[in-house]
Length: 153
Image 1: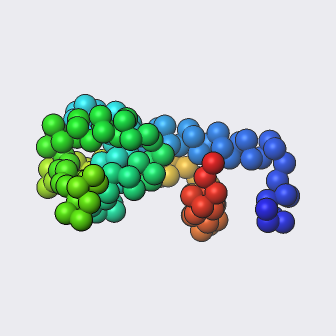
Image 2: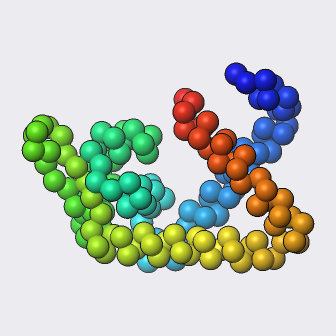
Image 3: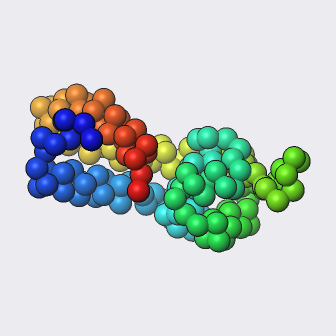
């Protein structure tokens, strides 16, 4: 544990956790995802594959933090919607890869654009001072996200 981590009281850490959760929930749902009938998990899987390219199912399950059974159901739903494709691993027939289709990529881009537009509108409604505070906090928040990825329970 770093020295800096010990300087925060539990209330500060709880407030940060709460606001991150609220932001995540408010950005999760987009018109594009609703129109496509995607669950939050399916949305996350689609965006992950679109962002990272072809992934082995085991890597995707680990990255998403979900069990293989649930992942298989989500992948099947996304394949039925024409958003993902699945292929066998030539070197290991027990393994499979998933990749995004052109339709899946267009949907992922639309969802990202809707989320960006939502944040842009909300930031525009804030005071200049608060907008600048958020802007200055970005490097620290990015570092926090990296640490959380490394130290996931």
